[in-house]
Image (cartoon, rainbow, N blue to C red; front, side, top):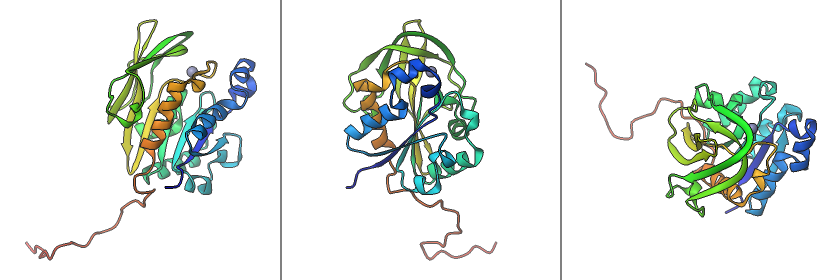
Length: 245
Ligand code: ZN
């Protein structure tokens, strides 16, 4: 089987505008995320907001099995027609992995249909990520819990629809909890939201986090290849009489 084709999309603004972020992620958040996925054997490309069509051309998406999305300060700069295009690809079967502050991205809010609101606090506290569904493929190879030493806190209530599967719940040193690994089916596509990954912390270098993303790519990949939406009248398979009333 040929390697899954992964596209890591990043807004790419913090790294340029904030020296502290550039120090943690000299090749951008997308660079660090892509490195971990390449080590796992995936065929990985990257794209950023400031490329033409945000690097999300029809052609780029046609060559993508799973798209990862990191964004924070420039959600509104993502053009609506590109969001329409990504949404259509997800509904046709492309996997989508939504990271951290991308809970407020246009594409995630579109796919959820809810506010995606949450509480947050940025003091670099400890996050303990609990596996609450050890049988789920995204939990493969992980311990029953792992610690991220310093992270931003996200707290419940998280304004999302009830997940189709919940894989992780995070606990924070300040006392809050959060549904930090949420799976959804949308059309023929699969969507995974993963909470950790604030831009000033080296979260995307951590082994357990990379394991989660590797597992998530495998889970979110199209099962039978991206399909075509079914929108036609269907002839009966059996010899069935037409009821005339
Ligand atoms: Zn953040």
